[in-house]
Amino acid sequence: MHIFSTLIPAVGLFAHLATAAYKLQDDYGTSDMFFGNFDFFTATDPTKGYVDYASGGSVYIGVDSSNIASSPGRQSVRLSSTKSYTHGLVILDLKHMPASVCGTWPAFWMLGDNWPSNGEIDIIEGVNQQSTNQVALHTGPGCSIDDSGFSGSVDTSNCYVEASGQAANAGCAITSNSTQSYGDGFNKAGGGVYATEWTGEAIKVWFFPSASIPSDISTGTPDPSGWGSPMAAFAGSCDIDSHFKELQIVFDITFCGSWAGDVWPSGSCASKNSSCISYVQNNPTAFAESYWSVNSLKVYQDGSSPSNATVSAGASSYTSTPLVSPTPRPAWKHRRNGHTHRQ
Image (cartoon, rainbow, N blue to C red):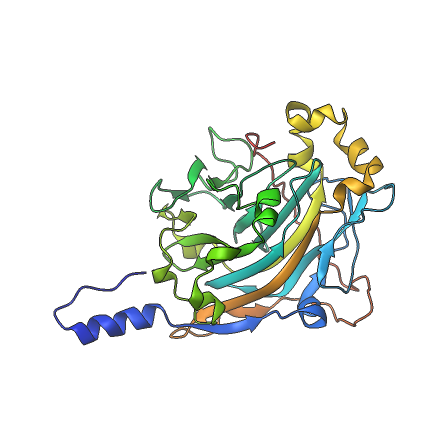
């Protein structure tokens, strides 16, 4: 976003205000309000993880850190929003994210039906003892990004999940240069905010540690044009609107599987146990810090555009008592792997 140059200052000011006019669409709130806007995913993990997705009714989104696990895996939670979105500004304020722990694979992301045709946006993601965040997109053919306009480092530039010359399902990925952006470093810094702006021109992600959150975010009047360079920006040879639409918001914590498990033998975690599954099964206290603590989650839309949210088909009902969703969503038929440079 930018101020259009013009010989008439008033027109330039109007253009600036128009681009910054984000209006609150959905405030996910806290406690019962928060969980009432999500479905609990209880099917078999599609990434082949050693995890049992259970349901819960607390602000705390975490895993079992008390018991030796049994098949199908350590109990955890995966939540998918009952609404899906096309375009918008998604602002997540976190007090705590899952720590950099061997065997874990946490993610905050957006996913659509008919994968990968409707796209996937991974906003926060990492495995094992990773120290910096990786943001990635996953699409069908015909989408690649430029290496410019952001502070992070490009790992892969072709967003197509079957792109030649890249690992399977690597997508286009950008890694943060800040150790405060993920896991242990994020938590030691007191948390922070992730803001994702999705327009027809680009998908951009900013990260702000808790000590430097822009005041316009805090006051509920977000204006990305004043935030400086994003951590990641996805634009280039890609028609965003043809590759991304109707995406749900997802929180999850997986164990092992087709990323954390696949890189286990070659990473630092192998010194703890020869098997990722064995380690996760028998060391419950290692996962005491494997949880999300959400201060707020808000979705804004450009005030000049109509609402771009729809209620997902099959959304479950909700009560304040923990329950298993009566209509769990089918397992997404894809693998989020290929990030072999992360351990």
